[in-house]
Amino acid sequence: MARPHGRDEASHSPTVHTITGVRRSLTEDIRSRQTRYLVSMAVRTICFVLAIVTTGWLRAIFFAAAIVLPYVAVVVANAGRDTAEPVPQIPAPAQRELGPGPSSNAPAA
Image (cartoon, rainbow, N blue to C red; front, top):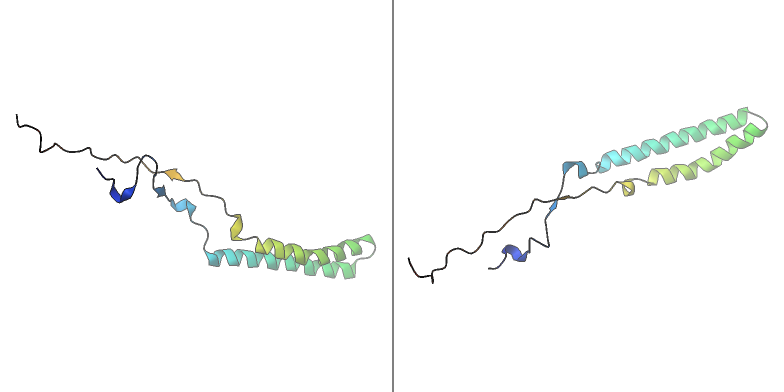
């Protein structure tokens, strides 16, 4: 007996998708990355202001932070959708097939 759609149920089970496997929408992802970038740039601006106001070794630290923060902000902002967790796959329940029916060649009782 031919298998439906040429599938062998013992070796191939259909993939079951769950609603928890859905990623955030692209709009939410972009908004989140923009917010992270803007917060980093706000911290950079504060570092520049503090570098102008302070003296000594604190000035050097604030200037260094103001120089490094743009690179860090871009890297963090671009680390978006690629870091999604893999979704665990749930195996589909086994489906059984009906065996062959009674043969018409069998002698009647």
